[in-house]
Length: 213
Image 1 (cartoon, rainbow, N blue to C red):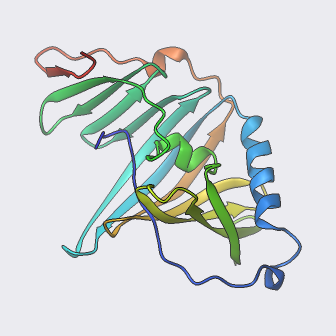
Image 2: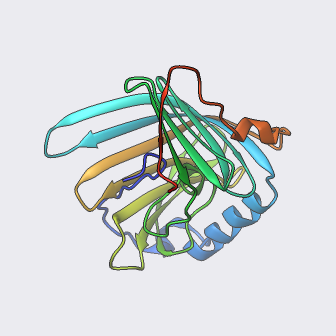
């Protein structure tokens, strides 16, 4: 499993759409896609919480995601860094003092950070399951289930704020029961991020493992 891929899902009860207003799941996703079509780049600060159900272990991290059309992103965690310019992926681990270099691959069975936090995947069917009060407006909650039976994601929940039509929270569980949630802390859009942000120079003394050959 590549470090730049994120695989997750969540079991949920389905509540009838008519109980929550006129917006259908398709209308909500269309608004989300329309919003993201207007974005050239962005910076998202978020928290990530991972729960391993069988081991009863939880991990929580804070991170920053920089993204730019198309397929350019940079994810910064404490001691970890994943950078891609849409062609090459660099995955740095401070603990291992190592950088993995690979070709970028758009894999429908996995989810890169920009797919999770910057647009709803199109290869999922959606159900509207509720609304919650948000800081500004209301959050519309969607349940997404992969159409493919071979997907490594079991299901997913998205919280879409109806004030800006951005995704502010994601909860996902994979086929192995690992639960992962992302909570957006701040979201800046169209800030003119340089392409150089999506390149990586390997520091001296760091082991390089090149997977491209």
